[in-house]
Length: 101
Image (cartoon, rainbow, N blue to C red; front, side, top):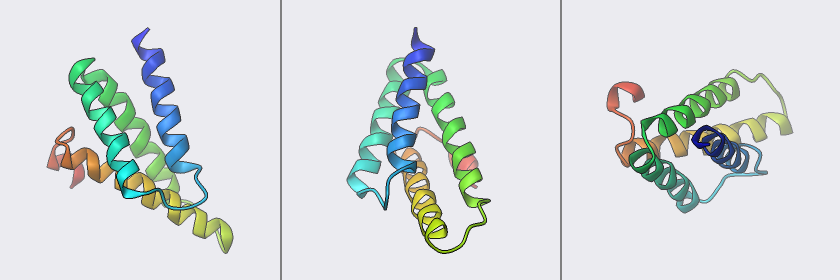
């Protein structure tokens, strides 16, 4: 089932980007975004749409987090990782500039 694959893929990428102890390497963010973009082109736009919805929801929740100390540093790293993947999705032309702005 394609939706189960989409969900598993999204969970894995968001877990790696969001639950990491620090910033991910820029090349990995580009690789994750390239994978999602290629699946979006080959499997169908629903794959990219579901991933993008989950990415933006998690990014929004991370930005609204009010934490202090170590928790704040982790939230900033997670937000940075998610924003980097979002930016790469734009670079790979999976999302239009109207979504960014």
